[in-house]
Image (tube, rainbow, N blue to C red):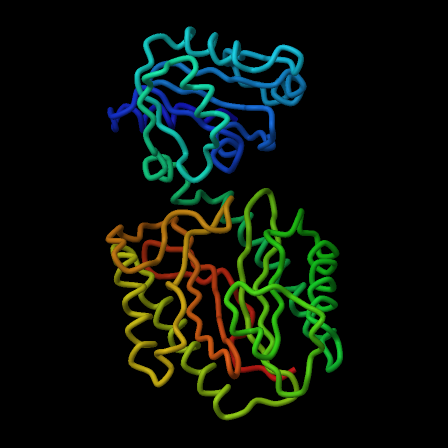
Length: 362
């Protein structure tokens, strides 16, 4: 698999750079099919409108050759260092004056190597342009997402049966991880969030030794990964009982989730989706408990373009996959978040998540 011509097409349409650099990560994997790790040894694809080459540590030679990519490669060994490989690569490409980089990924080590070869090189954040590579998903990608979500939901179903008063957040998290692997996910998408009681009001809190008690809210934010594609699911339950305030908060978030999915239709803007959700929450009695935007793109990365946020006037197009995850966080009571993974189609929003969203007491 070699999708480098896709980047060359982007360069031809955005002539503000003459070269693009890609380092190990989701774009690297998408373009080559190779799962190379970001480490202390620089590993870079350099792409111009009409040419490309790779800078690779020699220990990756066998892995790269398995990809069957016909490309010029400049290998380097630890004993020699990598700078000469950068020098040869830029000489091979010719007259390079500007380079577009992945602004959220690039490191000083690569930037320094570029500048040692070309001291006055113009380095440009090319994140937005490169995001167009993966902003819509093809059928095989959607199939991987569906499988990751389906297996994740099976793991969640097992885990809520495991929950009981006296078990800790960490015990439940570890059971969930084991269940994800038992059901066949290739890895976990991220370290699961399992938070109870007032901890559930911490949007990105960390599981602890807190022991579950009767009437606790219990929030799960987790996902498995299949073929590199990640599920990202949040559900909130109540242990043994639910009080009136918890129920009101839950029902408010559930309605916000419904509104968000309803607005995920072709040609609506991401701004409209987020504004519809946040306007509803802001008009509720729980306005002070809003902490974050409505969602984000999902695929090879947990968080990727497009972002469901006010001010993003980008239009939804078929093939995009976004999360819809409104939440309310009352730090004196509980937090509730409900998150679905949603595929934009020609006619409607299709929720890839199917786990029940009815208020559930476990």
